[in-house]
Image 1 (cartoon, rainbow, N blue to C red):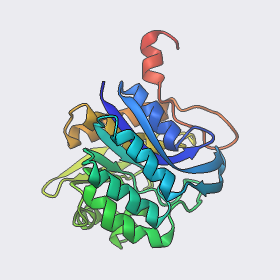
Image 2: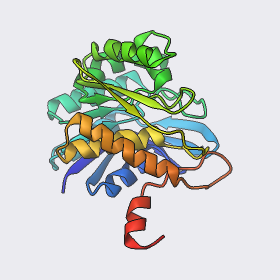
Image 3: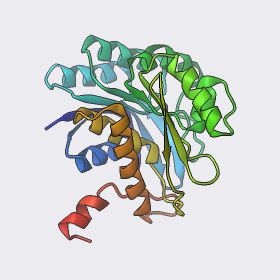
Image 4: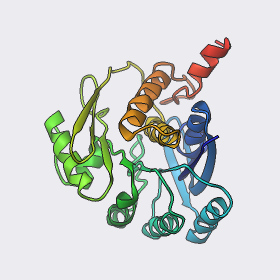
Length: 266
């Protein structure tokens, strides 16, 4: 069984972060490992507090995993602080971690800031060059590239700018645009346009975490980056289509719908 590590924050409502990542890994038939960077107080209505773990315990978690277990892929999510980012980059380089997917989490879907401003340049300088795939949404791609994104051509231009920062592949996600979402994948030579359909639901908590984790799981299983992204997009579409009406706000996606359906549980 392939082993995939998530490095991210914990979500008390289990719709995003570490919990969503581990659910995604399980749904893909890979063994999930975790390094927790922060504990958040959040639910379907938003994030109310964040407590960052110390850099020492983040480093110790990474050492515990890599000194014992052969990791096949890594997903990086919420890393709020500059020094934490440096510690993660140092350890991933030391242990030659393969197939790293960086989800550039900057702000929660409810608007809570999750990346300190001074940490942004450290993320660009130290994590993006390690990435097999980086997965910014449109607002994040605008911040990283310094460009305003209003069209698919703008997404392509932003992807080119971000690709120059060192990642092998850039996936600019179009879910924040109006109409049916279009994602743009760039490998430094070719663009792949991934069209989707807009699903009429407010229950989209944790979609970014789930997509990037699905990409990491697919890379661990030996798929190419392009195929890993395409399969992950199919997975998140299914999970959103059957999302769960839990809580008073934006509920989580249904990570196990496909498995439940096949087993006859639904």
